Length: 417
Image (tube, rainbow, N blue to C red):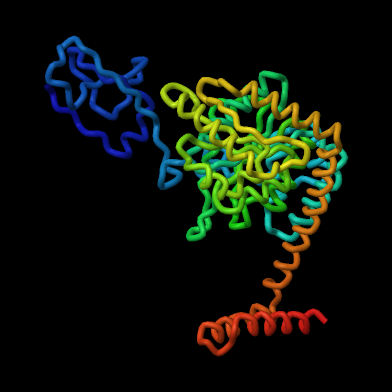
């Protein structure tokens, strides 16, 4: 093999294109352009050991640039789209939000939900204006709450159930509330990845939201998000709870039908009754009723039905029962949807449905007042200045907890007079 001169940086800048080959004959000097040929041919510095003399090796050498240290031109016009300066999104007005939501624009809907979830005071004012404008278009969707212990298969069930509803002609929105870490204050927001097929459907909208440390992970923001989805034309709103703590109580106060998903082998009858969530459910669903687990699921269904005899129904004039289903085989999903439709029709006929909606609206008002007063108190400058001293006195045993409360409330009262 004939040794070739190695390319210097300056020589490389003058080379526009070159083809390397192992063909016989004297190769031009590396780095020099052969103007008489369509492409310069050079003998490579290295050839595989098993290569034959007639094998050809090729490469394309692009002309370099000197304007910038990293080889990029100084003008942004020559930059690739991925490295061009990012343009800020257009700031939307109330009219822009309302028009986009009414047209079912998913991008505008997502931005409106982000606006509602923001803690910025300016965003709060704008969000309330948007909500007031879309209010006449809300209230027509069926709101279904879904809860259960982690591992019960809530996300898998929601995907199968949502796809079935879409096939029946409905538009489905899923509000999946993820737990927020009390240590890092972060959330995984992984529900969307676990609903792969439902996420891709144009008639489905999935919005994972952080619990944010609020009771049950759903408060004002989740309720307002639900209204935005209703205004965007979604017929059924599925609200998936965190599944731990007291989240079920909060979700029960914002949905029409509340569903508890359970597993087989959850415990004896007395243990089931002790779980207060059963008192909130309009239906108990034993999931994963397939394969070898089918027999155990049927036994669990009978056990839960027996437990329900000792529990007051969550909804007036409605008898809560247990059902079995499989999110994998889709068995039992049709029956469950029939139960929900029967519940809705019966509730509208006897007035229970409307009464619950009215009670929820009033509770919503009270919850927002509680939230406002809470923020007003702890964001007060005087309270923030006094809080440390009072807490230190409590920890040192110099002041009781009741005295600390009276002290702080007294300071707050004086500061707002």
